[in-house]
Length: 560
Ligand SMILES: Cc1cc2nc3c(=O)[nH]c(=O)nc-3n(C[C@H](O)[C@H](O)[C@H](O)COP(=O)(O)OP(=O)(O)OC[C@H]3O[C@@H](n4cnc5c(N)ncnc54)[C@H](O)[C@@H]3O)c2cc1C
Image 1 (cartoon, rainbow, N blue to C red):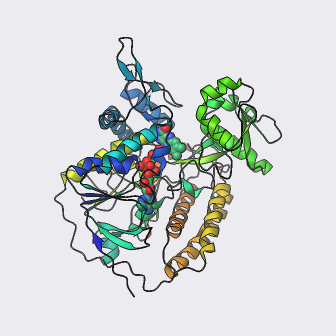
Image 2 (tube, rainbow, N blue to C red; image 1 turned 60 degrees about the horizontal axis):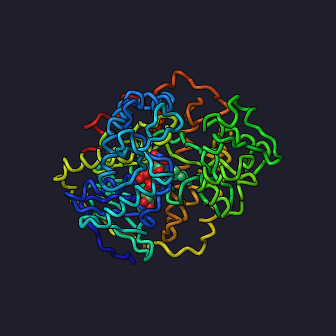
Image 3 (cartoon, protein in one colour; image 1 turned 90 degrees about the vertical axis):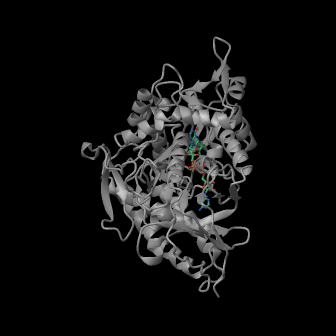
């Protein structure tokens, strides 16, 4: 029997409640009735865990040109300069907007006794330009945004609601290219409803959960990228996954980053036998850039078959350690490691997804009425390597850009197409949940082993064969059993794994975050060439996209 479910009709549907989704909701809510859905509690997403801060040109010795140049430099020839400039030029405005909402950034008195923002400096930035709220900037931002959306009468918040798929005119009728809404499951009741909305925004974050070790919360399963791909959007640069070199290695300590400042203060990286190894990889030793350190750790772990390496700061005075790294000290102690006396077990961890759904300067995707904002999107800002601290800025800048575009065309009506209710007539409750949990583990492990920090064509091909098999199994399972949150995420993870592997196979060079032993150098012929995958059914399955022909503001993608 087909279960009928009520249809919801917000004027804008936002899927995701991190910095991107909530900023967009606040910008729109003065004019439109907005629904924000999040698949867990509202605050659960990467935004809440961001530590360092947000980059912005605020210091009088700093300049837009300098921030642009640093970002282009980090991006290793693949940033779109127009997008970088667009973002950086709006950085000051973004910080001021957050302050106007009530975000309390850390301040210090200037020589005249006035309170001014305290700016720190992070790797790759040639000036102090990181506004922060102590070492918990994400929590400060997310809490203020949540408070705002909760009290706005025009914003309907639906926690524990997971989007399953987008509905488009093309999927229903085979014609046109417009988004009509999304099927969304209420996780507490299991009920699936169609949310009909003339404007839909994906703000679902990254896909880093596809790896065994990640600094991200469980929400980062690439749902938005997979949904957009199935609906017909292009996806770009998925091979560029940023790995953080040191995450605490402990079965219960999911996602805890050990700050790189520990290495800056004399921390040594050690193999399980207590020997140092970084000087064999780079003359700067433990102070080499993030990518080199992550690569060296990965190499040694694979060579030795070791579960982790160790970061040791215990030779510094205990008082110094406790006062400089209070959060790390407390957290490690909680898991049984006193870092004033013993080394910390660490592994590198997937940290940031540079690629995503292709968008333009209005955050429009290839599908009319569908926007993508935040880590889910490929705007062209990050290129082959995200410069630290630029990502929250991207969320804020593109949320505003999307809102401006949506509001400028808010009279547009979606075509009157009848959307059928979710059909569960052919499925039953699963009696084999073990298939889902097994495939989750298998997928994340082979992605870590074969598609991780150091790649080879052979390992990638091995991964491709495995992901093809898993996708077949998951599709079969999906068509026979009622969907659950775990199954939805597994299906999406398999899709993004496939996109990452295909993109990595396509890039026959090493550049930025993509490093392969088969092509260890950058190929100058591929300067400015992004990896763009086109969904099945489009004219070409794969085509390189040259920077500069990403769609102009106001043009395609998106028909409106
Ligand atoms: C530990 C850590 C530290 C970081 N530090 C910094 C930093 O200092 N500075 C910086 O600029 N960046 C930092 N980053 C990166 C930055 O935090 C993220 O890129 C950014 O917060 C992403 O925001 P977002 O709104 O796109 O997604 P998120 O904040 O990840 O939010 C995603 C939202 O989507 C929802 N969602 C996902 N799938 C679905 C679905 N199917 N249905 C319904 N809802 C769904 C989730 O529930 C969540 O609400 C850090 C990241 C981590 C993990």
